[in-house]
Image 1 (tube, rainbow, N blue to C red):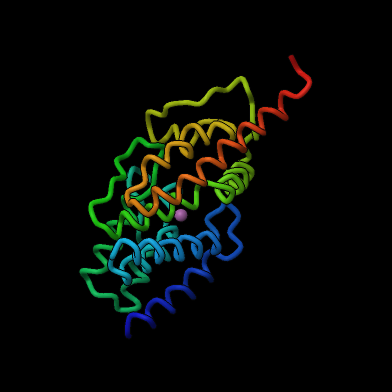
Image 2: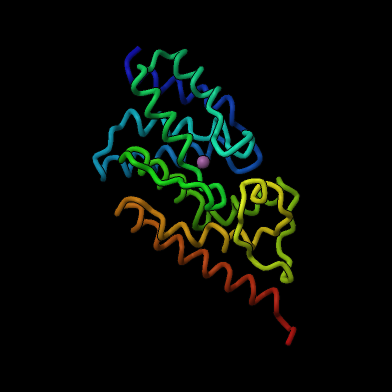
Length: 217
Ligand code: NI
């Protein structure tokens, strides 16, 4: 199979698996990350095939549903073999997916390949800005979290179990993760794109507190 047919097949596979997913890792998230990854790859001269495949498959096995520190990549590996991606490419793609997610900031998620940097940046850009705000509240609802509770302050997590299990409210997620992402972008192109999105989240929070506190002293 040539590379463009593999990519086409991969899109079909991912769309079928994630369409209608309710936690913010749905097909449209994948499509946005895929488009952003392609854009960043062209600016940064990264390998297109690795970037596109990784972007499409990065949420198929989600670390939040895996045990231990590492993302389990069983489904992704099976799929890659089934469409005859060569061994070296499979190794590269899997390696990026295993290491790219933020995991509460506790596990090192730094990328050592340009392709990894590009896809990680694209995924992080989709976590901030207006889309980031929307996805964060969608995810909070999915996890049954409160929107906000002024008595619970943002936390520094010490273990992955804590990240997964602590009862928290959604506004804290901005301080625990989203507002940190701008400075964690790998590529210059993503750093530039992040500025506007970061600024919007800060405006959103200002407005949120303004309304929340309206009329109180
Ligand atoms: Ni993602």
